[in-house]
Image (cartoon, rainbow, N blue to C red; front, top):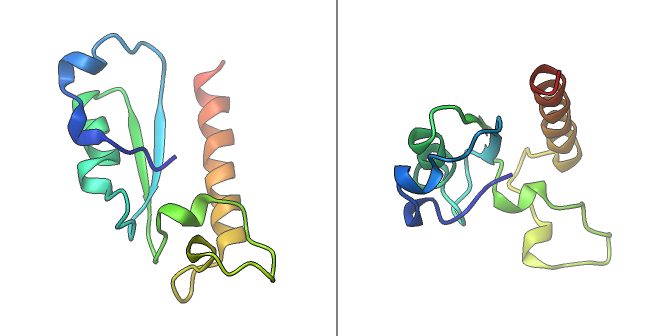
Length: 103
């Protein structure tokens, strides 16, 4: 889920990964940009799948929803983003991945 440090790895570092991996990230993530992280990991290890969720999904959209009284910076999503809906989409993709890969 929105992995970081993609530029710290090389193909050699990931060559021994033998299990299926699916990466999910937000297309509007400026904290951990998909191009240099999620997509980079997938490019270094071709067996990895990557899904970039569009529509204003950021790094913190994947965190639990905040309580109404909380006003922390990661509690605020971009306009039009429904955090609960994104959680359902990510969860459904995870279930589908596990059902397919863990036969």
